[in-house]
Image (cartoon, rainbow, N blue to C red; front, side):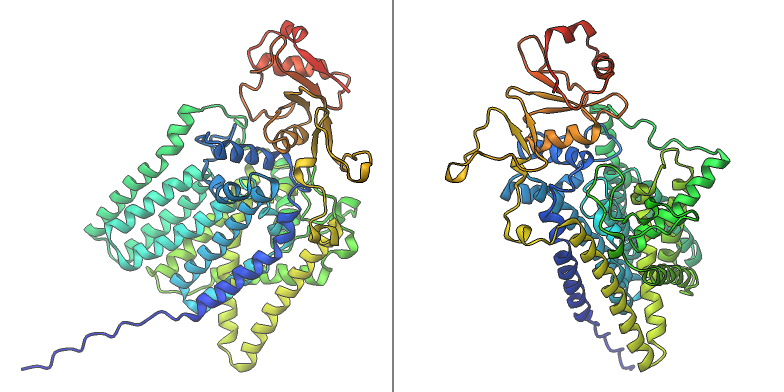
Length: 551
């Protein structure tokens, strides 16, 4: 008679890493409070379109995707929806959705790092995310334009892949396929995730020894993928209008590719990682621009003296390079989930860089949001690098703590300086005495009540519209912002040189119905209005019968 083997004692996961995650989420939330409170200041028209979509959703009208962009599903609006239901639709409740997306990014990356490399790596890995650059803080003030929900979906997909490889099960593969299909619905950028995840999973499966169970899991994954992508395909057919039909058109002209590579290396990667562009070979005022500033109609850049110094910038970029090198050189066993994650995220990162270089629509550093998938290998590599150093002894462990604290101090100081330069840490803001967003679009039929019998003053920067205004025509970066700040009372109509996000905007403009205000009319404004009118399928002579108002 043999003694039976003792039952294995289940190992409980440690709880302390969750405390580290919670503290990190709290800190990164506090850092973004001024960004949310100052939402009306940095509200541009792209963000305003997100706001108009949110306004429709709160009013019970749901779309398949964001207006004029079938490649972006409606799921990001859910990040701001609960806040809008509770406190109403405003720039602040809209931008708060960007914070929610960033918290999801940190959490998904933490779970991915823990599953693939262990709890210690996971805690180190979130340091570059918790203490993120000004450029990344700026992206967390965007909804669709920041692509942060796509990034969170990206990290969570690789975490799901680890579960499938480690534990198996067709149902896990089916859920992963469903998640990936919904990722394609969230944003077409998720194709790059699939291009890294699928080959990495296949290589891992092949190294372990091909099995029938793996084949079944692959079939179930595909079925889940088809189901998850169904909302995207249904939405494209229900609402096919695409204002950005050439968004992903490639170009292979050598001079263009060289310029795109320069923008990538000198502007976009530094802006994403450390928040500031590298100086150009021929110094110019533009080279001193703070990288939190969008290039189109955003807030003014703070004084260059407030920017991070060259040594801090060099430190951040050297750590980034070292982290990527550490991830590339990781020697996890072939076929392991860790090796699959390493290969998958690096393939995705490489492909997103390639797509950036060959994309025809790359013009300036504002396009750094398209390489946001670099944050995952940056974080994982940083976690692995810190673990490797800390294992060398007590002094090395203390060194990693000092280095992480230095990164946190430098990045936080950079963000605070940016806020101060923009006036977002002023006493008036903290007291809540600045102009509310409802005051930024004023109609002449409104009767604001002044205190102490004084004449009511229009807040600085407000747009005054004649009573009866139903449409505003002008610059893209103004009209949608005005439409959102008016609570949807007016319709924004951009001049034809810009994409028009809302098909059918001319409805409501008829004889004795509606009034269109032309903002800052250029000499050829009527010709441009006629062109926009024609694109709506309307007859130009109709413009003589509707109410047109020019300043």
